[in-house]
Amino acid sequence: MLTGEEFGRLFETFGTSAFRLETLAAYDVEAERKEFEGFLRGEPIPRDWAEDNPWVRSMTRQGKSVARVHVVRSPLSAYLRFEFAAYPGNIAAGESIGIIDLARGEVPGLPDHDFWLFDDARVLRMHYTDSGAFLGAEPLPDNRLAEYRRYRDIALAHAVSFAEYQHD
Image (cartoon, rainbow, N blue to C red; front, side):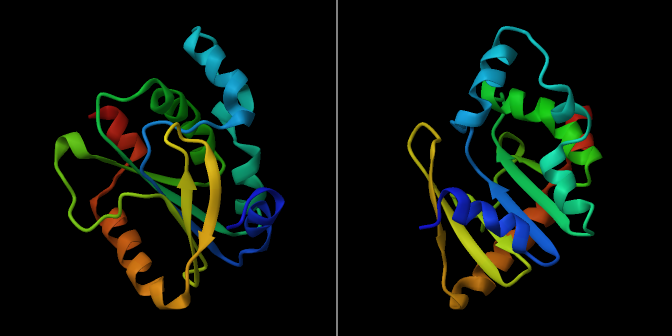
């Protein structure tokens, strides 16, 4: 399993595209804890998160594509409301974000776990604790690539844009 710096390096070294499928209603991210607690108290999220996410921008300024589909079930958890409040900054920085709300209908063929697909050539299954803390990213063998490309394609085909989801 990849963790820490080793996992983080993937975002510096991928060539052209990174796709993420997110499936959890809450993530326990230590680096976000202070901001999340502030959000719960009614404080705004950090300005750079809301306006132009620097982490996403570090990839898209190099011409790289960053995309995600988040599978949710409304009503949204407090964490998802927090994450969605930051999505406009990710979108401004060039990330494509789609939403699948399972309360509006099931989507057959999607996995029940998160993954990253880099350059259509490397897939990592994400592992979390029950509370959503990151345990590590499991590199999957090449013979699983077609399966995860299908998952990505299903997710993209059924997702609505974040903007469209917000206006529904």
